[in-house]
Amino acid sequence: AEPTPAPAVSLPLPANSGASGLPTFNRPANINPLTGLPVSNPDLLRHRPLMVRVGNDAGARASQLNLNRAAVVYEEIAEWWVTRFSAIYLGDIPDVVAPVRSARLITTQLGPQYNAAVAHSGGSDPVRWEMTQIPIANLDQWFHGSLFFHRPNQNWMTRAAFKAGEAYDYLAANGLDSPAPQIGFKFSQAAPPGGDPAPNIFIPYPRATSFTQWKYDPASGKYLRWVDGAALVDAADGSQIAASNVIVYFAEHEETDIVEDSNGGTSIRINMNGLGAAWFYRDGKQYKGTWQDDGGRTPYFALPGGAPFPMKPGNTWVEVVPTYFKIGINSPDEASSRP
Image (cartoon, rainbow, N blue to C red; front, side, top):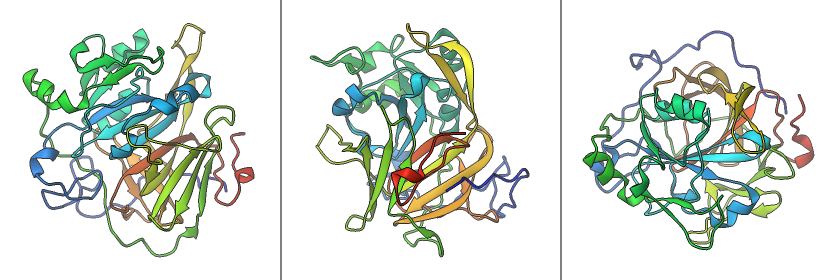
């Protein structure tokens, strides 16, 4: 299944548009703009979202804490073609998120899109410099150490943890929080008409480390996640990672000469801003459309013609892939990472 090329011109947009020209959405004050779900107190939404960089190396998966409580999780390819997560929390904040890993170039684009407080364990010098030049709360472990701790009996890839439950008090005390509302996404309990059956989503991240399958579970109405044939489980409670929505976000990937580790692995610059193809999955169906972002707001996900894609209330995983990736829905053999 080849990705549909994104149109070369801007889409027609609904009338309710913000300063960027992209649509905004009206919702009650107690509805989370990133999940479409109600919260007990609207004040829970008057904060920056917390964006945490989370490791996904094969040896780290057994120690991943509270991914299922994230409103949105992005997965991207890092050096050596191992994937890494950016988990975004708003309205439901766990005490701890782990394992925390370092920032990458993609973080410098995702952070401003969500006006986030970004928790990470540092990064290469060029990436750390870029992190200081963008409008986020930059919670680098080495400068905000009281928000982090090292877990016992863990190795260097899995020991760092973020005290998410203490973050808002810390941000307020240091003048780093922001009450600016999130634009968020369009939500609807009803799926849009049409769509193609999608019992699975096979994403050809490297088979040796990160080959991903989402399998639709009619009983829960969610997609359940497997990696390299094994169920991915949240170590906080033993539940399998599940998503109400899965979005495949086709984006240009460029190699750079920024060295990210002692083995000489170099950073990948992923263009998350502009316009590109996106495939949406909810309720066991696949829909094709586009993403669009000006760099200063949450992405606008659209159906052909420009109307917003109605996401299912609940959490969302965004799978960021090169534009040439082929996604499978019936068999893993349909999925390919060859240009």
